[in-house]
Each structure stands twice: as C-alpha cells, then as structure tokens.
Length: 189
Image (cartoon, rainbow, N blue to C red; front, side, top):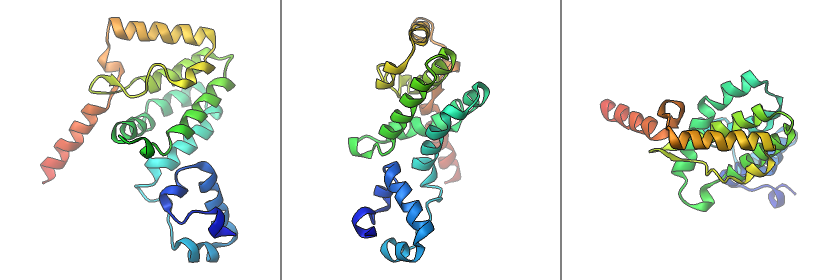
C-alpha cells in the first residue's frame, strides 16, 4: 500500500503536511519497507529544514506561544527564511509551503480573535519583511479576514504610519541581507 499513497519524490513529501506525516509514520512503523521504497532519507538536512519543516513547526506552535515568545519567533530567522523563500520562488509551483503557512496563520488569527495585540504582532511581523523596500507579503493577504475589528484598525493605522513616515529600521529588509551574503561570498572567493 505504501507505493500507492506515499510519493517516492522527496520534494513531494515535503510539499504538504499530510505526505510528511505519512512518511514519518511509515518511518516509525515499517522502516525497512520505506527504505526499500524511497532509499535512505534524512529529512533533517540543512537544505530541508529551512525550506519546509521549520514553517510547519512554527505554524503548529503559534497558538501555544506567549506574547514574548511570539515576538521573539516572529522577529527572528523565521521571517528572514520566509521572506527569502517568497523572493526566490518565482514560479507558482515553487511555493511549496506558502499555502500551509497561510492556513496556519489564518487559524492562529481566528483562534486569538479576542487578543488583537497578538493578531497585530503576527501580521506586522509578516508585513515588515521587504525586498528592496517592497513588501514580501501583500497587505491584502487572505488571512486578513480573520482579524478582529480592533486589530484591523490597528493594522491599517500601522500601514498608514509606515506609508507616511517610513521607518526603515523597523523593517526586515531582505535585499540588505542578500547583498551582505553576496559580499561575504565574494570575499571568500
């Protein structure tokens, strides 16, 4: 039954939570059959973790975080990785985890309807990721439907403030990060 329900392509296994969950279950219950089907697979390689697994973990844990933890997570490497993925994934079929993360964020926003501060913190963090000054996440993101009226008003006020008096220091500019990486790479060459 495994070949019928589990993909042999690692990219497909990492493309949705259901396939990943099935793979992990098969790895636990029937490791020898799984190894025969897909070979030896280590999901926790450096190239796999930032590209999919960390976003599944973040999305699943968002509702469990305190406000302080939420601030720490949302203003750290998570937004950098997400923004870089959004900037690098030009073709629609390369957005492997965007729909899942959007669903996680929507569920989180809906779940904390009575806490507009927490809703605003998450939305502002995603909206603060820019590439050459342009937002990585559109301001009309579909998760906005889950905002409470108070959080929506605060978000609109934040957008107006950023538009009228841009505070570049409060944004996460990915182009600067990419330029720094390119400069570091050229120095090593």
